[in-house]
Image (cartoon, rainbow, N blue to C red; front, side, top):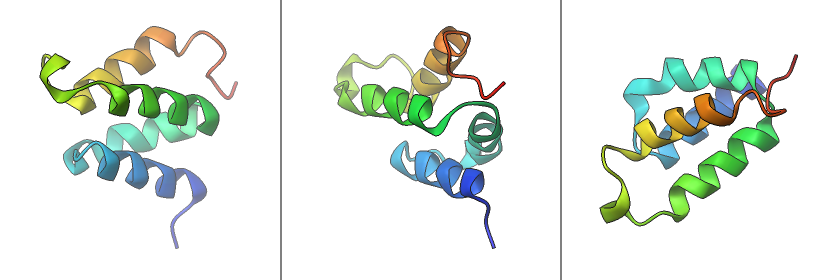
Amino acid sequence: MLTKEERLAREIADALSDTEALPIYTGFAYKYKEEFLRKILQRVLSIPQDQIRKTRGALFTYLIKQHGNQGGSRD
């Protein structure tokens, strides 16, 4: 049985077509609030693919690291 955080991480990985980074997303799900992660995910998914330099997963990770200290942490 998956935890709530593991389900969220899998949902993020599937949405970003980046299942290889599932362990990273799982770490994010335990560290950050679900609302914060979903907000960043929606932002990443709203950007056209041709405007993304690397991958959606890389952009998601970058944005989490940039904005994570602005109230997204569970601490």
